Amino acid sequence: MILLRHGQSEFNLHFGATRRDPGVVDAPLTALGHTQAEEAAQRLLGEGIRRIIVSPYTRALQTAAPIAATLAVPVFVNPIVRERYKFACDIGTPRTELERAWPQHDFSTIDEVWWPPIEEPEEFILGRARLFRAEMAALPDWSDTLVVSHWGFILSLTGQSVMNAQTLRCDPTTPGPAEVTWRA
Image 1 (cartoon, rainbow, N blue to C red):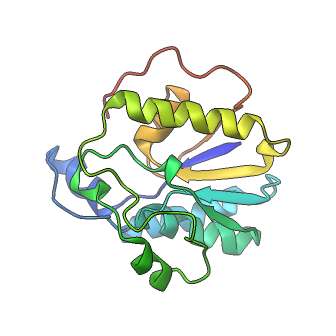
Image 2 (cartoon, rainbow, N blue to C red):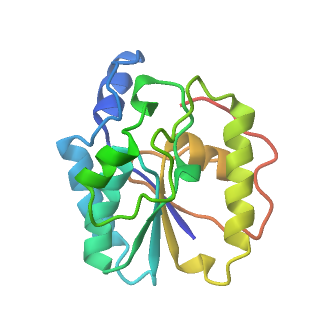
């Protein structure tokens, strides 16, 4: 499968400059982030992608939108691939609001409040990554999947840190990382 970190968000822009949480809830993409998403759509042409799994955070949904349109593939929203809850940007948008903003997607399988109420311990996101790896490995067509996710989840799944809009191939049938270093 191909993993794609969402494009630059308002959080990434400000946090990158100050290393402080700017307090942006469910941070949307910046203009650069939208451009990165469009560019990713072009880069992914010809990769044989048949579906997109996306986190319910706005920045991930906004990144997936031009890719889904360009590739004409279905989008499946799955909170298991969400970011580790640690900053204000990791407070999500309630399901009913997401349904209104993104009527083309099915949010019926997620809870109204789908993000944790408190900071998520590292072992929890590592557990989510292991579960997702096992679920994907069980699918015969895992290689046809694009996963639009986040820095912390991709790090937990692969042990590798990726930049905004960077892609990374991942074979879920191989073992995950032995350890993860949590530094952005």
